[in-house]
Image 1 (cartoon, helix red, strand yellow):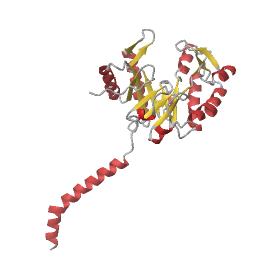
Image 2 (cartoon, one colour; image 1 turned 90 degrees about the vertical axis):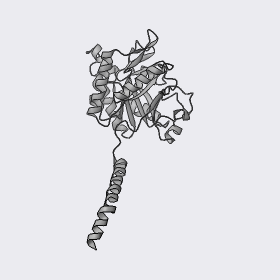
Image 3 (cartoon, one colour; image 1 turned 60 degrees about the vertical axis):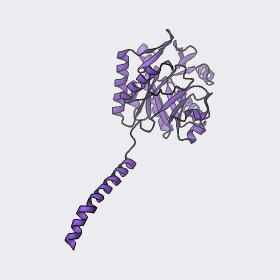
Image 4 (cartoon, one colour; image 1 turned 45 degrees about the horizontal axis):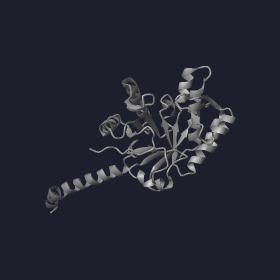
Length: 296
């Protein structure tokens, strides 16, 4: 009787047993497998205006908005989105309400020749760090944002390279500022725009980095969209890929600019950036509309 039962088991039930075990193992692995950097944010957008309704952002899991002029944030958060508020740390534009106070403190340096009305900030001054940490970031978070998008920090390295004596210590001050922000706000999402020279020192304290104008950009002098110089493109891709390799939890995004009616080129940009390992978005230079990814 025992021999017959063994034969029946081996002939009929054992294959079913192994098949069931394989299925259960597959399900278990799918449930417990850690989410790799970037997989949780398969689509994203950036919008610096206030006219669109929250439902316009339904296709996106990550949204970057201006921190003062923007659509309602809380409905997006309720829908499970990460919503980051823009903050310029390397310079202050004259339309920001804190411009006068910062100017009065004599924290502003020269005007940015490429952006009239926007002045570089002396990142080395502890009063700027205090204002950012104690005033500017809390004002963003109170509006419902889940994190911050850090812009213009690449100014630090550019200024120090331009005049190593006058701007000595700017890059280190930028690094310290971001680390101070993380120390005060350990739970928020932080995305760094470019700041490539800072990445090796900050990849462990930020959640994501944005490569802006990696493959294509907008020429303000010629007033047209252009492809980025091949050498500059290759250098950016290499820098971002090295950062992703050095910091496995770092998500890499790309933001390229192109005419929205040229869908063929936009498709090419998306394909190229995904092949690079980035999460892409292609926008108009004004960032005042959502440009959907073209479909075949």
